[in-house]
Image (cartoon, rainbow, N blue to C red; front, side, top):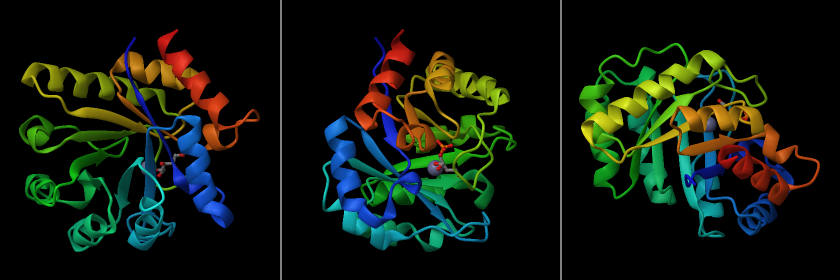
Length: 221
Ligand code: DX5
Ligand code: ZN
């Protein structure tokens, strides 16, 4: 049985009672908390910033991951590290040479992640992958929750898995967007380790524990 981590996307949580949401997710067995940071420029939407992570990080043992959908990640890395983000993910589209920023994140004692939009070529990743602890493959267009999974992203996950195995690395592959029981099985078969999940999990009629159990049994079934 492959061990996968499930990371609820806090964008889909009930903002009126975020502290309780975090407690309930932890009790239900979530592994990480995924925070979608949107700047209204790299993506159209605005979401929240480091202060929110700082507040919720103090409430939980769960690993907090900041997914930076911002045009200038270099400007914000320190703030997110200081806020207590355990993992900081920058987008490939926002940096010319990601190695230096990934090294900076690691230097701050945080896990370094590199994210790719569905249409961004993976070309050159083989050269910088050793600087990353995590590669995040977007499985929907970046910028909003509740979109349909794009099946054409599956070969990209396989490609990254192959790269990691060929280089003998232990880099994790995370996927983000449109994850449900069906697509979870597909992405894990393709090589994903971490499933970011928003609408399916927060909208599950039987609650978070049932949603997490359904996802785990789908990928192990
Ligand atoms: C999209 C975000 C995702 C999103 C996931 O830009 O990065 O994390 O909130 O939500 P679902 O699971 O609904 O696609
Ligand atoms: Zn995300």
